[in-house]
Image (cartoon, rainbow, N blue to C red; front, side):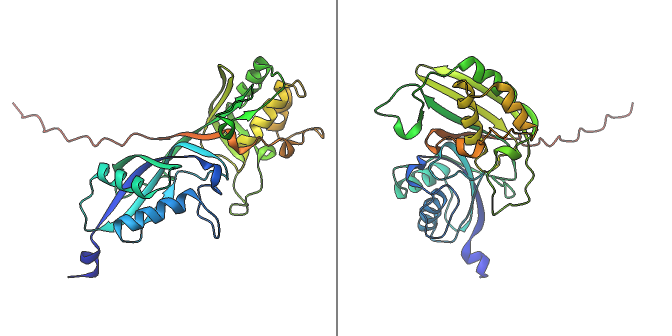
Length: 274
């Protein structure tokens, strides 16, 4: 029996994970820091009694939450892989603020980050003090002009250079700052103002800095056109975008979109000659 036979067959799983990021230093594993990915890895390795490869669709910063982070898990195992049983077993081992909501068998080449075509983030702004949602909103005490914020939000859609909205990422110093925003909107739901954005990818702290600028627009301290100028990489001296970064508490990775699997068309039999 070979070593590979003893280790078992390669199994690839697609996990959908929700988590409260309040007590974590983000998704990505770090030395001497508590991260969501590390919690998931430790639980999976305990379950499978083997080393696993886990990667997510993208990183979330310290304090940022997820409603549907997608990750792939690769493991060699001799155990039968029942997705529902694996989901329950992982959740039995995970802390209460991390939950695997779905497990699916995935193709061998599935990659959570590389195969994603877009990601949607939700940011929640509260217009009043709340006893229950403090960890999940940014409370802005002053009145906000929702119409002005909506006009500014519409300017985000399309292909833009978000250099003015990024924080320098030491792990990817040469990354392109051009991002394609597929959708962006502002909605109200009771005392909540909900900002959503869907894009091909994101720069470090980009969404939180966009929200910070939108709140400045809502307060009347900036005009919607100021955001457009920043998108054209021509911020004025008055735009201290980095200082206006919205707190992480209100930010959620809401969903990750993937292209539908390609359908293989079966060849049709040739028509018989008459």
